[in-house]
Amino acid sequence: MQPPMSAHPDAIHSAHDHGTRAHKDIAPGEIAVGVVVGRGSEYFDFFVYGIASALVFPTVFFPFADRLTGTLYAFAIFALAFVARPFGTVLGMWLQQRWNRSVKLTVALFLLGTSTAGMAFLPGHGAIGGTAIVLLALLRILQGMALGGSWDGLPSLLALNAPKHRRGWYAMLGQLGAPVGFIVAAALFAFLIASLSPGDFYAWGWRYPFFAAFAINVVALFARLRLVVADEYQDKMGQLELEPTPVRELFHGKGRHVVIGAFAALASYAMFHIVTIFPLSWIELFTEESVSAFLVLQVFGGVLAAAGIVASGVIADRVGRARTLGGTAVAIAMYSGFAPTLLGAGGLGQDVFVLLGFLLLGLSYGQAAGAVTANFGTRYRYTGAALTADLAWLVGAAFAPLVALGLCAEFGLPYIGLYLLSGAIGTLAALGVNRALRLKS
Image 1 (cartoon, rainbow, N blue to C red):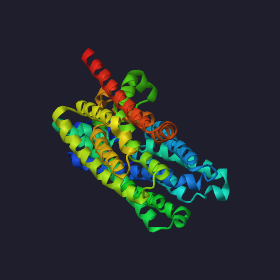
Image 2: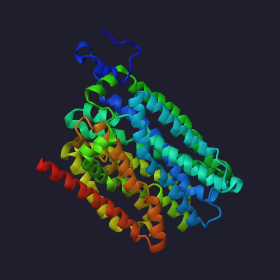
Image 3: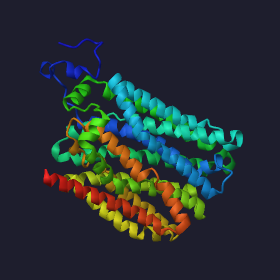
Image 4: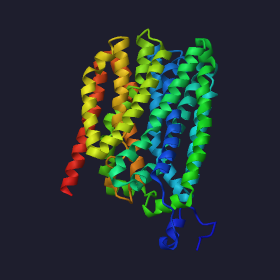
């Protein structure tokens, strides 16, 4: 017998006996499409902001500072979203418990789209002074909270619903949203910079990608809602206990695994903004290279990253996800030794730095999410996976452009190598601790 239509959508699966209802089989590929669409739209929003932080905001919002200082200010505001993200996750979990998953997702994606589009309407410092900076920081915080609140559990559902011998493959599918979002954002900025005069670009051209972000979020919202409100998905989530748990209870029972998970992905997340956002600022500030041409190069790098993510799925299913993550951390450590030389070697060296860096990023990022989330079991996996990702972004990626640019401008390029090396060491240490705990248990 079907439950009443007025029943709480998230409570249906727990209010009746699952044996009285026939469940449709959920194809992992269908879940993967939803994950890619959702993550692609979110990453597009964030990369639009990141690229603008390196190329636009120093001129529009910090004209009173020299270009380097203005860029550092912009990167400081860039980091605020990652600080706010865990708070958005906790608030989103409360909304889901109070209402349901679809309400939470609608609120989060609406907030993400409107805060991103709101940046397109912001007057510059020349029009309203310091108020423009305050509003930019506020919108960036809201952007981060929205991203945290948009956690829908689909990556965890994908991982648990995939065939055991193909989990590495299906895990990487969800990660493809990152290069897709970056490729679209970088290509759009490259087109605008190449097509417009500097005056037109800084006056109004840079605003178009932020408008586009709102439209993309509307499409992504309906694509994801189609999945999360479907009865079969609600029921499957309930069967697998993919529901919010109190944060205090999570940290009391599984706190060490949250920390291990965050540091296990550190090498990948440290690479993330070192090959995407940081080099844009370096090219703009310290070279005579064409920024639009460099963005086109990064678009090709995004394609390599996507290929690396796909390859990581094949490798992980053969050797294991943790071993794949550890092996790529070793590769990133090796890359960190000659990355400073490449970046400082002129056009060809910079091209190799970017393309090789993107490939390594794809290989590592493909298995960075959820490589150790089995530690949470089923009860804590939904909230644990979300907060682990939040902390990984905060520790590994939030301050990467700010720290890398500040250190390299003050002390030289070798410090970018040290930054990447520290991420690789963090990953290897976390994986070692995780393995030791597993052997003990």
